Length: 246
Image (cartoon, rainbow, N blue to C red):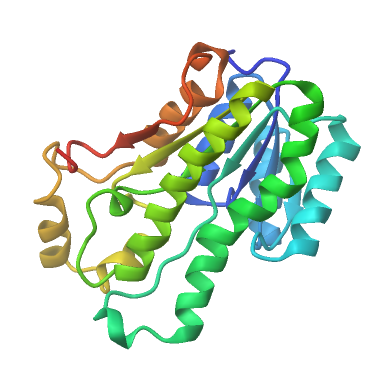
């Protein structure tokens, strides 16, 4: 029960890594707000774990403001913020990605971190404590070809994590990132372009442990980084990647 008595917002929590993190946090004692664009799926996860469901577009300022307001109204504080929501463009040469897709990738993967920080950090400063976790990617460390702008957005997230950690440390706020390798989530097909045995084999050949990551893998790392066990850990981008970035 490493998050006993804590409150946590997890974005993109209706499926994939986010749902895994929400479930693990709740199992370890946290009150969890399950945030997602998919209202029905968010409600299902929230009901399962005894949490709160909140529909939000993390790339929209008003939507993020409403999300933060709902959390403060319910709990009076936010102890943990997990920026998990993310998207990618399909694999293709970097010059062929449309401007609309580029803008969307950076709005969801990068601007959302700014928007949630703008709403939540002041409350954490008032409390003199808090933990923020940004779900980045091994793509931000060891980029895959034809995912150029997705790679860049995750590299941005890693740099933002380190910059936030330095600035917010005097206020008792820790900021870390976790870098998953490709996992069995709804985004996997988008990363691969198409889901075939041949492409899966190609992807798996780059992961020394020989398997994709799971929501449980990422949830375990998230739990550690957001708990008091990691009280001296900030500015870290932890690779949970089966050795891909070695």
